[in-house]
Structure formats: structure tokens, C-alpha cells
Length: 291
Image (cartoon, rainbow, N blue to C red):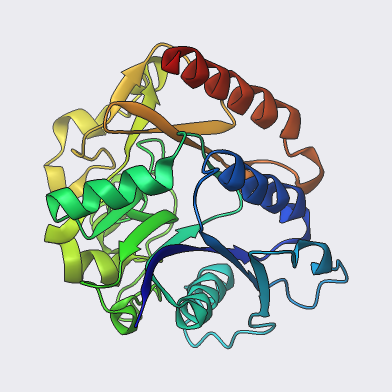
């Protein structure tokens, strides 16, 4: 029988993610001081020489992931297949009612967020709370993103949590021209199958969107039929300015988390100082509000 605790699952893929992973684990403990959550790290780093042994403390369990993933479709990114496989291994290894998949570069900064989410899901009947793709990235046909996914497995069986990209669809090229817009909603990535199966049971974190980016939308998005647009109609919040390396998410009208877009930067230029300062400011703000 599953207990009512939470297992947080991280998939560690790239060597340069280690500082982010360590920061993530520390923050989850700091922001949830009364939680009995467990932390599980799936080492999917393709034979990395970096030891994760230092993470294997108390509630941190490290398990082996997949070193080499056979990809039958060339069009699918190896990293997406590897991430989906790692998440499957982590889900199988968990033994709690709630599981939460968090990318190493997604930082939750709402105090007591684990208990808040558990109580909210119990009260509202919500079964999955997940991040959505930022409005800055419209290349995928589905809304759900694997950056953050919190699941109540009492109602969503673990065996049905399949993060594997749908192998039946074609990924269009990333150029923004009229021809490729025809197939833009066909792109599948991690979470697509989950969204299609449980769409009526998912609640999404709401991303913040910088006003000047909204003003620069391609003209075609204003005149083409909706099915050909890069623009999407899901809710988002427009702000005057945000840091270009970070995407911010809101949940229940509270600033909930931030996502560092790692693939936009060189591996040796991860803005750890910016991440730390931003989270410290958010934490200080919440402390001030609680007084």
C-alpha cells in the first residue's frame, strides 16, 4: 500500500547539470521543512565520470538510468527519449502516493509547496499539476511540459504515466515559414501521451510572458487560421520585463517556480549566481509576507 508522502524524481542527463541538481535538492528541503518527501535521482548521464555518490544521503536515492538509448526514428531527439526512459525508471522505483518529476533546471520557490499541492489536489479533485510550455516556445503541439509534473497516483496509475514521445507523428523543421506552419501542431515530445489521455484532469502552471516579446510576434500569427499559428491560446501573464535566461511560472496567483533555459546557453555559462539571487529575493519576499 502506498503511503501519502511524495517522491521527487530528477533525471540527471548532462554533466554540467550537477550544480543545478544539487541546488534543486537543497531548495526542495528548504522550502518544505516539515515534509517527509523522498528524493530519487536517475543517473542518465551516459557514462559520466562525475560521481553522484555525494547526493546519496538520507532521503536521496540514486539509481542507474539508461546509458545508451536506441532511437528508431531519427527525427526524435535522443535526449527526449532518454529523459522519458529515465522518468519511467524513477516512477517504477517510487513507493509513494504522490510523485513529482522535476527537471534539474526547474526550481520551485513557493514555501511549503508540497503540502499545499497535496491539500489542493485532495480538495479539488485535480490529479495532475504540470508546467506548460512557455509562450516563447510554440514549436510543440501539446501544452504539457516535463519540466514539472506533480501526480496523484491513487487516481492516475503509474503504469499509464508514459513520457515517451509519440512515435506516430512527424516533427516539423524549426524554421518559421508558412509551409512548416501546416504541420506545427504535429510535434510530439515528453508528456504528449499523458496530456491526451488525462487532459481533463490536468491543471497547469501559468507562465509569465515579457511584454516586448508579445509585441514582436510574427505578423503571420495575426492573420493565419489558428491551426497554422505559432501563437497559442493558453493562459499566460504579461509582465514588463524578466531575465532572459529564466522563465517564470505562477500557480494559484503565487509565483511558483523558475526555469533556466539551459539549451540556450553554453554549458560553462550557467547563471548560477542569477538563479541564487532570484530565488533568495523570492524567498525573502514570501518570508516578509508571512510576518
